[in-house]
Image 1 (cartoon, rainbow, N blue to C red):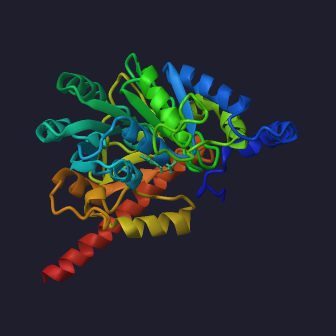
Image 2 (image 1 turned 180 degrees about the vertical axis):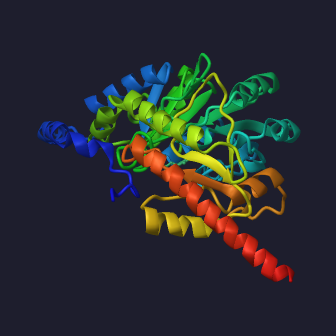
Length: 381
Ligand SMILES: Cc1ncc(COP(=O)(O)O)c(C=O)c1O
């Protein structure tokens, strides 16, 4: 049976092209802040519809730089509790206070009503995370709300390279956006990140922080920054990936459509709702399982018997993590995370694999439900 547990990094397929470019760069001796970084920044600013683009060494540092540039020190930043810890950590590292918000289980993204409730005089801004690469209409509601309240909107687009909602393109919706190029992401160069913005002064501040706080006069340092630079070799890999972004997202959408079609809302599953105007990227395909199905048992069976991986993210939620441990209740996120599963959409999964995944899921869910029913009835006696 074909192995579809792991995604083969796409760039392996262009091994020759990449090694030639790396060879040329090594011969040139220019390994940092050279022509590949420039070209990567130029191309990404065009693709993500932003005037400026700054390549950095990770998605986490991209967030940290932006939050420093927004000057969140001693201020509150609203963050969804269901996100990778980096989103919240970046707020703390920039001197701010993350205020965790509930999510809307229909989209997996931050809950607009909870955001409205939590905005106060000390709120500096909101971070919108496009969970799983779903771009919901609520993004635009949050954009309008931030404008009205005069606070910033930062997009965490780590799952959403190439996404859009209506005429709005991810990377240009907020005051700034951050992308990750970590090894498992839609676009990757192993490790890497990107900031996009339309604001020249903000861009200048971010570039300075990214480069030890160095001002335009080369001997003057104007912020206490650090080295957050991406290397030329990483830029070569990332540049090559960019060429395939449309194809990658077309593939992921094709696989997602199969999951949508074959795993109809029924006793076992509830689908996330996708807006008609959304151009999603489906980094992972999300689905809620009936609470009557043992999720961990399903995960083990699918990996062992059927060679595919059922996963879920991010549990425990941020507000429950030891680093934050907030004594608050965010009921919608707490409830839905227990039932969430993610199915793979990467390039190693072809349409026939996706159909097989759906059939095997149905089969194993039925079996697990029968088991649950029997255990229940024994206990009832
Ligand atoms: C939503 C989200 N934000 C931020 C990050 C941080 O990116 P990186 O791992 O490149 O630092 C990730 C990556 O895993 C992520 O998924």
